[in-house]
Length: 454
Image 1 (cartoon, rainbow, N blue to C red):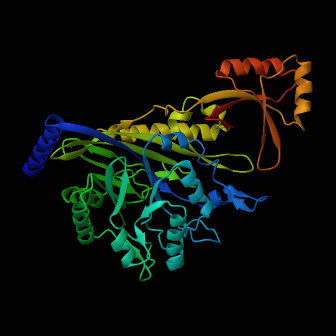
Image 2: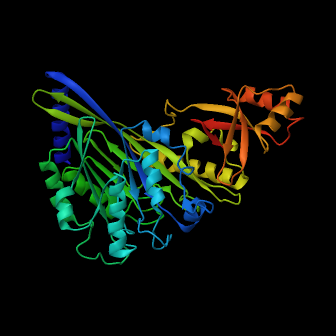
Image 3: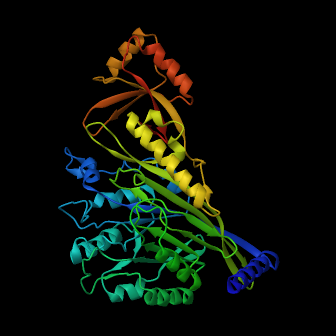
């Protein structure tokens, strides 16, 4: 206990020195951590388009881009392989490459790959996953082709906004499947982790992050081993410890005096799991502050919050999956979530998560603010029509010309027409009532950053 107090005192003195003695500059970097990125068979099937013969995950992640773009780095746990066809879900995952493409396009910057599914497709799967991520210039760590690659690239150093961050990643195991030499999947081995943390300190990063794949599945409290490993990492130089694998949320702790933070499990970022507690997760948003002087540089955790996100599966014939940020959808879910069981599941996830994290979190609260570059508008979607001339002729009868007319061709080759955008729901709804007698089955649709929420 005395050593903890002593370390806290030394750290506080360093911060005070950096703030008040010859202070020159302050740098900041914001990080967003995601939970388990998975692809069960239901997800793979939902993303497949028979007309193109390809998979498309654009819709699944379409509401996340403002959140990812509002931070400097987004880091997630890729709990699958990109091993090529045949694509499979549980128990041995191989997801389409288009998943990684979509993650890159929506703003994911870094992926950790050491988990219990790293060698689901053995040597070829592990190595192909690395090649695909490299081809997309998606930074990654945790699995390696051989020892030379690990020696050259580990700990992973990330340079951004004048910060140098060290990222380490380990897993409790690989489901009993042996790792084929010379491949490497970083195991949770305290001797190895200690050695890697020593090496990280030698590289003099501004902060060291350890991403752990650990714990018991579907349990909302960390195990004794999780807590012990956390303390071990902190003692040997880590500032942030991020947990994955349980597939449900577990508590978060920000120890401000020691400048340390742990999240025992972020839950599922995206998966096909639908049972209660498993159908969503949290995104941890952290801002680091670095005070630079002539003689010393001190980095501290300046803010830490979480954002809830839920996975919605539609009940229509497509059975599509969408990751929904709670702050965007909680007050307007009915415009997008159509069926009552899903609305109830959405609310249940929010209530369960807030009850758990509200009770056990230390120093980390929910961030409900929607990113400032999120633009919400409304339009009237007109029932299916053959062409714009047909639309205009009917609207002319209703004496209700739209202020602009947009058309969208969906993946099934069906064209939908929308009126121009309204900034307020009430105005769009007033317009809808005006044209309903001539154009029934139309409805108001909400748009987030130009994307229809239907």
